[in-house]
Length: 110
Image 1 (cartoon, rainbow, N blue to C red):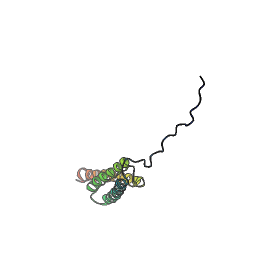
Image 2: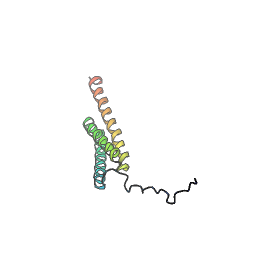
Image 3: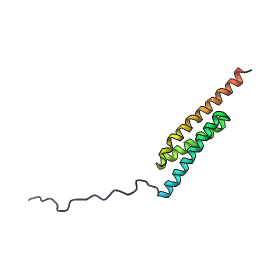
Image 4: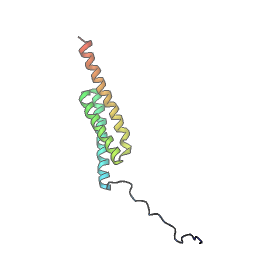
């Protein structure tokens, strides 16, 4: 028995054209939503440094988390990840400074 190689080698199928599971219009809409949430979170967190730190800090934290979740789930607006993370850090600073200010006002300024 002589083994002869096959005359037609196996050719794999071409790779898929899109690596995403979502249609392009959904990705565009989610990218715009993530960018908007990240920008709003940054504005609110910076505003929270100067006034109403607890309220603006909490709202900014939630919006930053929403933006980061959207970026992670859909893989869009990766350039806005830094803005959302910055907003998240500043909002935590807002809340901590508000807590320290409340502590100082209640216990040290009697």
